Every structure is written in structure tokens, then in C-alpha cells.
Amino acid sequence: MGYRSEVIIGIHKGLSETLQAFSLDEGEPFADHFTLRDTRDDMEIWTADYIKWYTMFDKHINNIVFFIKCMEEDGFIVCIGEENEIHSEIGDWKDYIHIHTTWS
Image 1 (cartoon, rainbow, N blue to C red):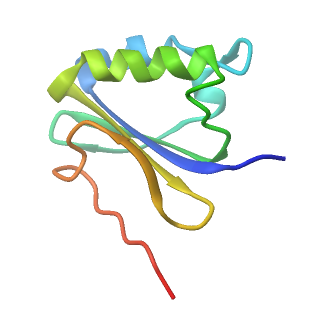
Image 2: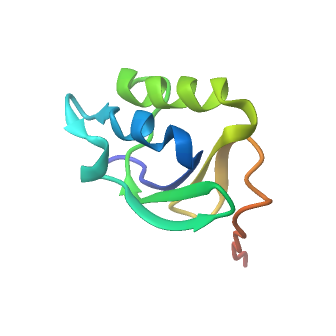
């Protein structure tokens, strides 16, 4: 159980192999969770659906977040929660993807 998110990661093509070298959940490869969905300009867009993304509890996720933060303009992360809201974001993602949320 627990809160699940859709996670979108953008990374410059030249840094993609480094991103894919990260693991999640005690050693599971990045590619077991994320799928390459698109390439826009020189940015690869990776997505994972229904994933636990707890930055305060998971060292593997923290490593990915730290890596993206260090890339400055060469990467981003956007997380959309179960209630269709953006609950965290890093970097300038709005030039590469469009997110539509609903409300009632």
C-alpha cells in the first residue's frame, strides 16, 4: 500500500546512460520501473506509473533526485499524485511536457 505517483523524469540525451545506471527498491534496475516515452529536442522523457516515490525515506530515490538537481538545466522531475495533483517538481519541465490536472 502507500501513496503512489506518476513520475516523469527528463534528462539530456548525453546523460541518459548515467540515469539508467541508478537502481530503485534495493537494487531493481531503473528500467524495471521507467519507460522511455519520448524525446524532445535533446531531452529524453522517462515515465513510471503507480510508483512509490518517497524522497525522505528511500536512499535510491534520493540519489536520482540529487543527480537531477545537479544537472540544473539538463534535467527535471515532476510527480503527479493519486489525486491528480503535482506534489513535487525539480527543474524546468514546462518547456518539454504539458500536464493537465482535473478538479471538482
